[in-house]
Image 1 (cartoon, one colour):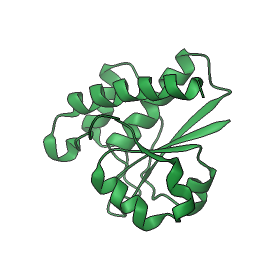
Image 2 (image 1 turned 45 degrees about the horizontal axis):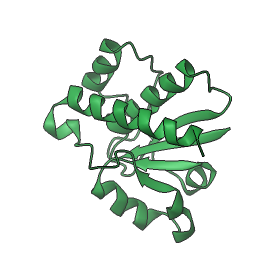
Image 3 (image 1 turned 90 degrees about the horizontal axis):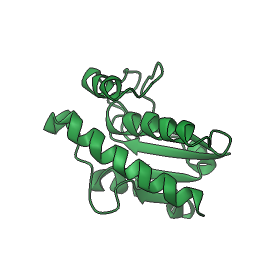
Length: 147
C-alpha cells in the first residue's frame, strides 16, 4: 500500500482537508488496498489541535467523512515511509527542504501543480481552498493510478 502524505503549516486546515478528500476519492474508486492518506504539520504551533471548525464544516457540507483528527508534526520516519509528500505552498516547501534529508526530497511535490493553495486560516475562504484541494487530489489520484 502506498501512503500519500499531505503537509501544511499547522495540520488543521489544508493538509487535513486533503487527507480526507483523498481518502474519500480512493474509497469511491475502490482503491483502498492501494492507497492510504495521512497528514502532518510542518510547524509546532497547532500540535494537538483538532481540525479547524470551518474546515470541518466544509467537509461536512460536501459529505466528506473525516475522523477524530489531532494535529501532529511530520517526522523523518513518516517521510521515509510515504510514497509521495504533497505540500500546499512555498513556505511549506521551504520548511520541507530544511527538515528532510536531501534523499527524501524526490518524494516532495506541490499538491496543486499550477500554483499554491492559499491558507484559509488567513484568507477565511474555506470553500475556495476545498475546491482547489479537491481538484488537485483528483488530478494526483489519476496520476498515481497510472504510474
